[in-house]
Image 1 (cartoon, helix red, strand yellow):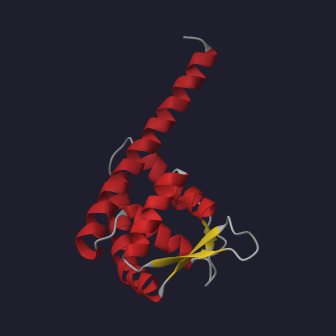
Image 2 (tube, helix red, strand yellow):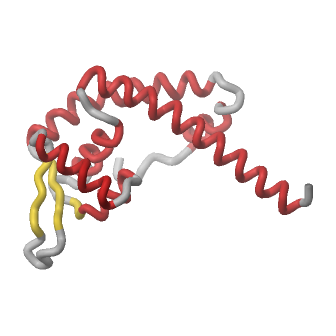
Length: 151
């Protein structure tokens, strides 16, 4: 194996480790949020992203990026959350093609109830992952990240 092949394998190993940690966290969060609040991880992510807008709203395209979903998957997700009255869609006055999504009071209330469950499940899953030799370095790297500028 040449140097280029080694570099590819190192990146591939890093990606597999990241995917393993993501999968571990995703399963733990999904289980906790579904059991306690009837929310999926991606639904929680949408509510959280909208809540971080300080009362403002987001374009569907921004939500797609925040959730790492395709445009059509985001539209279906938003429809489900809208049916549950957790968010609303608003047409952009300046651009009729633009659609915004905004958190409702019910969505904000559910998010606030779900946040402690999410945070506790995340902390527990990270602690368990940190005990696995193959995931520990990545969890430690997460702990060293600077806090998000928005809080």
